[in-house]
Structures are given as C-alpha cells and as structure tokens.
Image (tube, rainbow, N blue to C red; front, side, top):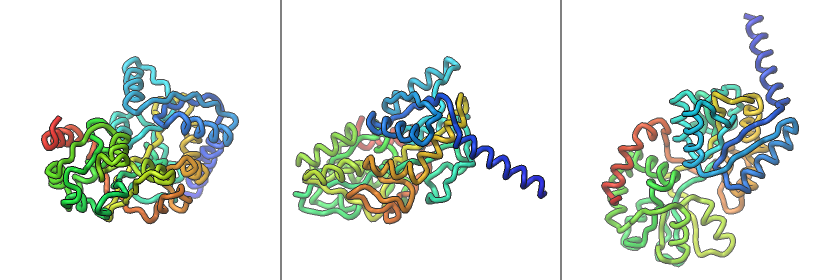
Length: 325
C-alpha cells in the first residue's frame, strides 16, 4: 500500500512538473474576441516561455465547422479548445473527442461549474439576466415582472435559433419548475418577438425601441459605466450562464502544454486576467470587474449540459411553435 501511494505521489508530481515545464508548439482554437484571445495567449506565454501558441479565432459555430471537417479528414489540428458553451463541449465529450484531465485543480470552484470527469473546465461566467431602459416605468426584480402590463409589447429577446447564450437561457428557464415553457408562452402573449443575437437586443433597449429584455451581462454593465441609459438585473430566481469552457482534445499533439494552458486559465492568475478583460470570473474570491457583484452573491439557475444536448432539437421545435420560425 505504501509503495502504491508513493508511486501515485510520484506520478502526480511528475505530471505537475511536466505541465510547469511544458514546451513546444500549442495549437489553440478559440471563439474569444481577437483582443481577448491575444491577451490570453500573451499572458500564458509569459508564464510558460517554452511554449509557442498558434491560435485561430472565429465564432463557436464556425470553429466547430472547421473542426468537424478536420475530424472527417482524420487530421484535427488543435491541442486545446476555448469556446463559448458547455453544451458543445458535452457533445464532443460524448463522441470521445476530449481528453480527461482529472489532475486539474478545481478545488476553489463551486459545484456544477466543471465537468465531473474533467473533460472541460469553466473559465468565466457570462450570465444572462434582465436589461431595462432606465426610462422604463418599472424596475424589474424577477422574470415574472416582465409579464406585468408595463412590459406589454416592450420586450426584446435574442433568439436561441441564433444565439448560444439564448439557447442556454431557454434551457435553464424551461427546466425550472416554477417557470418552464409556460413562461415562454406568457412572453409570447406579452408581444415578445425573439430575433437575432444579444447585440441587437441590447441596442433595442438602450435606444428606447423596447424597454426590457434578456441579454448577457457585460453589454449593459459596461455601457452603463459609459453613460448609456440601461441597467442590468440579476433576477431573484437566478441567471443562466455561458462559461466559456476550455478542453484538451483527445488527439492533442502536445498534451502537456495543453494541460498547462488549462491550469493557467483556471488558476487565480488566469481568473484575474478574465476579470481584467471585463468578464465575471468563475473562481470565488477573485475581484470582479467594476459594476459586477462578487460571484458568491450570484444565484445560478441549475443547468444540465447533457440534458440540454439531448433535448436540443425538441426544445428549439417547441420554441419555434411558440414564437414562429
């Protein structure tokens, strides 16, 4: 038994040392905005000067299309993925495309943020809650406040047929026993017409065309600080969250550098970098950007990526039935 424990300790130390001493070429596919991707790569290379990162950036849908073509050709290029949502990662995990990294230190993180088998890791929280125009007659505190007469025909929403964040929000809301699909039916009766992405929703509310909506947090929080007539509400029921997970491909050519990249993003240093970019860090205790509450004060709606993946087609068909195509 003592020999076995000693061997395990040596293996863990060896793995840790290899990750710290990672060298060589690391290929990253990411959906981060260009400036954020460059800042991430620069910070990682500064921490691991023996690694040279080559990165390709595009939206998650286009990144996945490129990767699917590479899978079909039998030549996937990336070592590591840093993309928008956990549902996409869940699909890759189900196909055996992701390498488990159970040695990653996730002890500081809350339950439900990381894949329990270590196939992907949340790097930030991009939550969806309520945005309202500060000239609106009502300040909402709850999702149900948007069903009041003051919000009739004044609602904007991104479409889950377009936006990944809106899809996750729909999945979280409709899985809630107190909201469910009846809530979306009530929104339709209120005159909501979901379309486009979060940017269009934000512009409609900021410009006064609509007064209330669902949107990702950083748009109104950042723009409010610049004087825009908007405010963001974390509803009392909770918010959904896109977690921008990172994962190592099972076909990674440089798995040790990939592990080091994962370690960096989920370390305190990596989380402070996310905060400096203006995003809510996933790690409790890291100071959030100006205008955001600490992550410990935010209630997240329960979300099951595997269930969302399995029910994706049916959910989008239901959404289309309620709101029209």
